[in-house]
Image 1 (cartoon, rainbow, N blue to C red):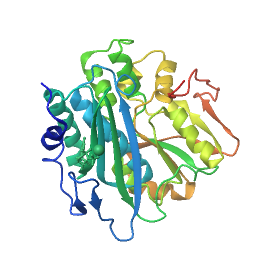
Image 2 (image 1 turned 180 degrees about the horizontal axis):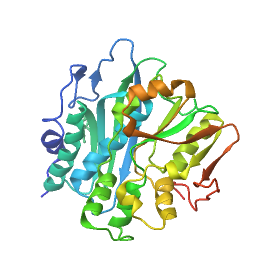
Image 3 (image 1 turned 90 degrees about the horizontal axis):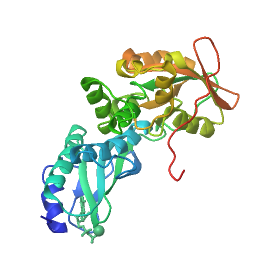
Image 4 (image 1 turned 60 degrees about the vertical axis):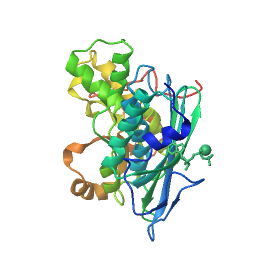
Length: 320
Ligand code: ADP
Ligand code: MG
C-alpha cells in the first residue's frame, strides 16, 4: 500500500536520526538552519545513485540506504573533512512501506555511526533515484585536494582494491565464487567503508587525495591531471584481498584492482619528508604504497620485472 508524501517523511526520515546541537531547525520548514563552528570551513558534496546504473535492480533497500550515504561520506573522507549534516532527495515509483523501512534502516545505521543529522530533503515520484548531499567541516587551508601531488611523492591507497568490482561480477553472474567469498565481495560493493578516520588523519601529511569511485586508474588520473604530473605504479604492490588473489590469471585480478569502480578506498600522495608523520598517523596495515609521482606525464603500470602492463580499460565513465 502507498502512503502519502508527508507520512513518508514523518515515519521514516525524522524520528531516529541523530540530533546535533548545531542544527537549529531540521526537517519541517522550507529550509533547514544550522550553525557552523567558529573558524571552520564547510565541505559540501553530493552524489546520486540511480537504480540499474549505480546499483543492480535487486539490491536490498537496506544496502541502497547505506551506500547512498557511504559514497558521500567517502567524498568527505577524501577531503579530510568531518561530516555533520545531510539532505536526502528520494525519487521512487511508490511509497512501499517494506522498502522504505529497509531503506531508512540502512541509512540510519551509517548516520548513527557518524553522528549525522538528516536535516531536510525532497520526496518525489519517478524511477528509483537517491541523491544525498553531505556537509562537513574542515579547518581552514587543511582540506586534502587533488592538485597538490609533486614528483617524488609516494602514491598510497587504503584497504584493498578490486573487491567491489568482483562483487558486481558475482551479482551479474560473470564469475562463480564460494559462498563466503561471494558474501565478502558483495558486501564490499553494497556497503563500502568510508575512510573518514584515515582522511582526517592525513590532513597536513598527504599532498593530494581522492576517493576511488570509478577505478584506481581513472581516479589517480584525476590527481595527475590536476597536479600536472605523471606516475608509475608497481603492480606487485597492489593491495589485493585473499578473495581477489584467487582470481586467475593474476592479470585479471590486477585489471579488477586497477579499473573496477566502487571500492571507495582513498588514493593519496605523501612527500618523502612526511613519510614518518604518515607512519605515526595511521596503522601501518591500513594503507599500502603502490607507486611514485613522476614529472613525465602519463601513468605507467609496471610488473615485478619492470615490464609495462597496458590495461584494456581504465575506469567507469557515464555517457560512454
Ligand atoms: P517544500 O514544498 O517547501 O519544498 P517539502 O514538502 O518538499 O517542502 O518538504 C517538507 C519538509 O520535509 C522539508 O523540511 C523538507 O526538507 C523535508 N523533506 C522532504 N522530503 C524529505 C526526505 N526524503 N528526507 C528528509 N527530509 C525531507
Ligand atoms: Mg520540496
